[in-house]
Length: 428
Ligand code: CMC
Image (tube, rainbow, N blue to C red; front, top):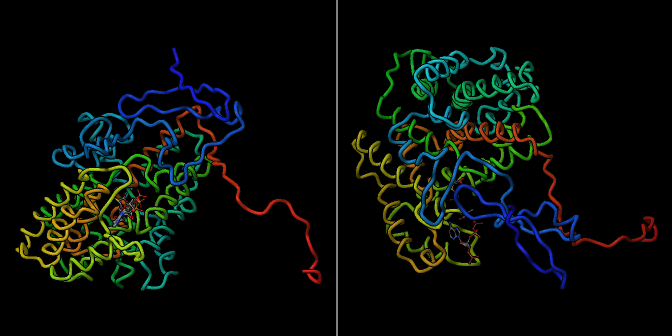
């Protein structure tokens, strides 16, 4: 029997279905609220609204836990690899040996991009931000691969998803190479997914490139940590764009644009810039005061989260990975790490941050780690996007398979002018 929630609006009683998930809070199904009562709900920023049903990722924000298809994300980061996580998110299950061989081979065999994409790159200014180039190139994939743009064709959906998983790292590396004026490096199918990406970013034709296995493992872990995070801004953007039936490349490119903002995936770049600006532990208190000042727009980047009201589990793994990378480089006395650790300590004991439950998030330590590996800060959000492409695609697939899927069309509380008479220019 369907559970009901009862409530009263203007002395009239209404009943709406109450839906239970497998874990987490139940939801009131308000889809019939308007037709039954002529009222809408109002929830800017979706603070109390579940926008869809999903079985991909579960976050327990109070406990600081995150699960991919039921597996703890931190265990996946420790024991799995990124491509296996991509498979898990997409298929719902971990692959057996045969499925793994088939999947990893297919991805390897699609890492090259259409040769003509190189001329497409040439249209950009060299100084362009790599994220600007990557956003445009992902959207442009629909022009290069029109044979996998029909969202109603199951095979084309699979092909387009595999193409994006395989080609996004190639495009991202090309964007980086282009921005620093170096030649593009073709993919190397002898290497695994992450090793290949490192090579495409850091190899030069004049020298033999040897992958640093510890960096490759660390970056793979970082990709796993960023692979999905349920209905965040970029994933919801992808779902809303895709709900119109637009082709998959166009849908996924909207995830890139939304992710770029400093409150979302752009926070890793902003967090590193902030640590550099603070520069020394002696300046920390000044910045803590700025973050607490209501008249100052400054926020501690890499701190706070809409869902986590506890330590972000991704930040814990990231902090450990950061130490591992700096240790390999013999940089355990890294000045920025020292500032970050002290800033974290002070903020975690400060009444303002304690009361508002503001903890370090994934972006707090990722910048230091990626920068130590040789990536410029302009590449941080691009790296996040490579990983999150896996999550966007899984959500896109889930949405395409949902028979109840409708075009997304929020309503509004109109607060503008009431209908009024037009006055010609000479009478205004
Ligand atoms: N520094 C100082 N104060 C903060 C911060 C911060 N980083 N984050 C939130 N607050 C305060 C905020 O001023 C507000 O105070 P009050 O209640 O007095 O008005 C309160 O905490 C709640 O903040 P909010 O902006 O209403 O919370 P939100 O859930 O809308 O925003 C957030 C979440 C992540 C956008 C926000 O915490 C933030 O701007 N953090 C810095 C940017 C950042 O690190 N983003 C990465 C998020 S994790 C990776 C990802 O998902 O992309």
